[in-house]
Image 1 (cartoon, one colour):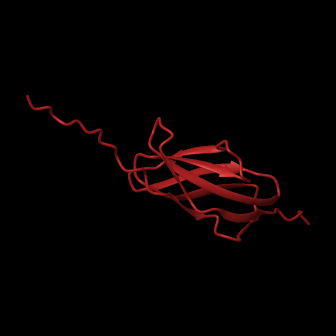
Image 2 (cartoon, rainbow, N blue to C red; image 1 turned 60 degrees about the horizontal axis):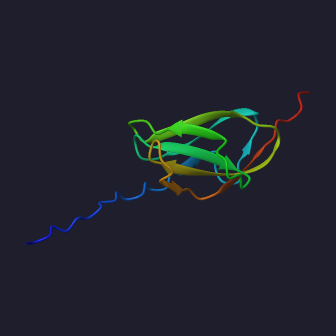
Image 3 (cartoon, rainbow, N blue to C red; image 1 turned 45 degrees about the horizontal axis):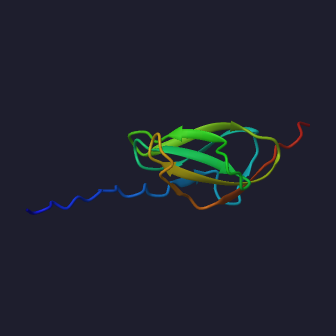
Length: 108
């Protein structure tokens, strides 16, 4: 009698997302703005900052491979990163970290 070998097929992890805005080292001069980037259509992007282990925002990657989230942040320096995940799982790939500043000049 011959036994048939069984193999578990695992899908590749998602590719890392790209953060396209705000740019590295940018100063955002308004407290309400968008963080956006590119990823794999159908995936979910989790946005983190300041070494947090908990995502601050979630965004879905649209059919054109774009994602965005609108945020309101107080003035200060931020270090953000994102992880692209298969929906409903923790199967994720992280992005590179990006640093930017939020600064709204006082009104004259």
